[in-house]
Amino acid sequence: MFVITLMVFMFISIMMGLLMYVAQHPEIAGRSAMVGAKTSIIGNADWASFLNLLIQCILALGSLGFGMVTSWIFGREYSDRVVKDLLALPISRFTIVASKFIITIIWCLLLAITLFAGGLLTGLAVHIPGWSIEKAVHAFRIFSGSSILTLMLCTPVAFIASASRGFLLPVGFAILMLIITNFVAVGLPNIMPYFPWAIPALYSGIAGREALPPAAALSYFILFATGIIGFFGTTAWWRFADQN
Amino acid sequence: MEHVIETKNLTKKYGGLNVVDAVSLKVKKGEIYGFLGLNGAGKTTTIRMLLGMVRPTSGESYLNGARVNAGNRALWNKIGYLVEIPYSYPDLTVKENLEMMRRLRLIPDAGVVDAGIEKLRLGPYRDIKAKNLSLGNAQRLGLAKALMHNPDILLLDEPANGLDPAGIVEIRELLFSLSRDRGAAIFISSHILGEISKFATRIGIIHQGKLIQEMDIGQLEKLRKRRLLIDVHNKNSARSFLEKFGFSATFAENGFLELSDSDAINNPEKVNGSLVEAGYPPFMVKVEEEDLETYFLRAIGHTGGHA
Image (tube, rainbow over all chains, first blue to last red):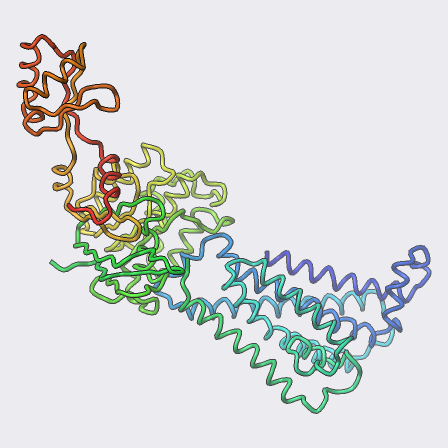
């Protein structure tokens, strides 16, 4: 499962890179209207756009991908009906939940790094113009920041996976949040700083080039609070709820 | 002697229904307690409460003298359990599943995995993924996980489900030797009374959440209904004759004549003799003991029944 997710992220980053290549050489796209349409979204076929693309990628893909990984880590023992093996043990339930979260963090960060590295390598391989180390480092910082913020939003997914005893509902939740975020971004941009799932996008500056509006501290607070509530909600669930 | 498993008025309510209703039972060290009841009687919920997986609505349970509570980690080292169908991580092999369990239980000795495989005869399936095991072997894997850390108390929920007759005998012997040699207390729930009565030392019958009977196995034998069955050629006349003689005779479900008087049951030769003399020689005279299933159904048929 781990390997599969790695491969998916790698694949996507390579596809992105190749997309840039096509943008550089529009004659290849000439035969396919769809590919041509996609490349025109990107703007200029240079590193600045590409790095921007990678950041957009981690925001959407991260939200979904990290959500799925979290659902799997927390929900699979329920759907495989093996969860009783984790209950009456000399290890505290808090430890079990905490270990799962640690694995979630490590796994998701590895996926994010794979995406970025894969993108970089592919980009270098197809010789996208406009390379500079400063741009890459700057982009990487935003990329990591976005990844970490998106990660924090995984804790409610973990809670839903545990409470619904499966992984279908939490995946559905992750998808729903993604949809709502896009909807809010387009239709209700004023709410964006207060809606936890929209905050990583704001941080990255993708949704409009201006920095976060004055409610920046509040936004961070909302996001962290969501993360922490999700974490303690999940541990409380494991510790106190009836496990049938 | 101290009780290693004890519940006091243990109750669990789900949506207005008392699934477990004020159950108070005690199990001593070395005892094998058979917890009998129909599906839905409350057996599994009781076991889950004993394991801290479900919180009681009221009442308490104690294991080894300590109050059961999900947070009380020290308890679980000495308890082994098998609840309902034993699932394992489907993509891990038998050996890997056992190794996983060993680590979760913090057992330092790596040899327990192989010992478990041998004891439960899982050798040929060592490297087979759990999802490809037959039900019987999945059950054995579940038992291997439950026994790995040499527990003093075993809580088993229908462990013989899915086992073939040979498997059932093996499990029975395994549990018997555990209780005899290691003094482990075994609490085993089932609805197969015949099997349980072969090795339990004490029985508790639960029906609709309530513990309606509890007794040592010896007492059970005494409570089984017995009857004298007779087959003759002229049943109606024979019946009137017996009635005149002072025995109340009825027709059993299989058409035979049935006498329930203890005098008749204890002295079938007397009845036989009288019938022969009167000209109704029976060609079948049998003292039949109620089978355990019937006893069980009879016991639960009377809610609030007496022992």
